[in-house]
Image (cartoon, rainbow, N blue to C red; front, top):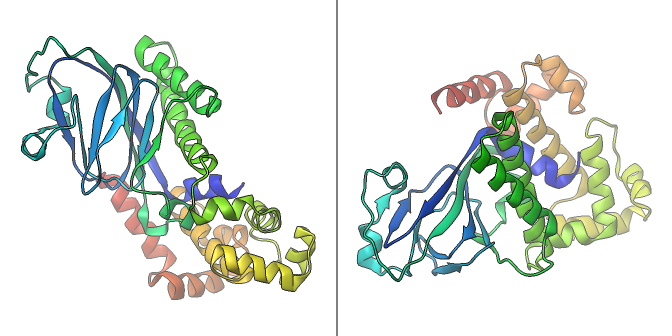
Length: 309
């Protein structure tokens, strides 16, 4: 695994959902804050996104927008004023057509993909935590071809109802999330983690730790893997990541353990072995110290959350 894959896997739970929406006339709908991430892709026409507490964003054909922290927002045919936003129709009612839309001759048709991901925010990797409230990826010629291809495939699957689409659509949605994060990182953002993964020494060290977190890593062994001296690795890693290499490794091992407890039926002895702890007791002690809850209780609460979602 790599850092981005692990960062996404640590928070992704359940199945994503999406809708292909076609609308015209005058419309304004609200999506409430959500314990997950939302996205919109404009396939035809244009509209506006108005995030809670943020500035309006104009969306055109091919634009993609990700709301990674589940920020409440309104989407509308125009940059609606405060009164219109207050009266915005809840998305579920707007989607099922129970709220009529006011026709307006000047307004063309708009087609969008609207969807959301369920996320477990109790163990968020810092790469995911630092994503801005709104990630707007405008459609520019030659930009992010993988993202554009995923959008095209997803739009086709949602519109065609082909055999196997029940498997294809969730897989494409997961792919879309990865491509949106990749595209954000490639946009020249000033966030810390694009710089982290752009540093060849720190990126090499992180790849090694994420590829085999159970290995008996030491600072010397990790420095050799990255091709630098131990002081050089310690200085660059700590400056960019915000914690020393072995402290990051401990945190990631326990975060990975939480993911395995949530997503697999593996007994604690297997989980301990996969994350680099010699005994279940050692893992349980470290896990409880770090997260304030035993592994068994964490697994039970995760199962309860999943059942009630």
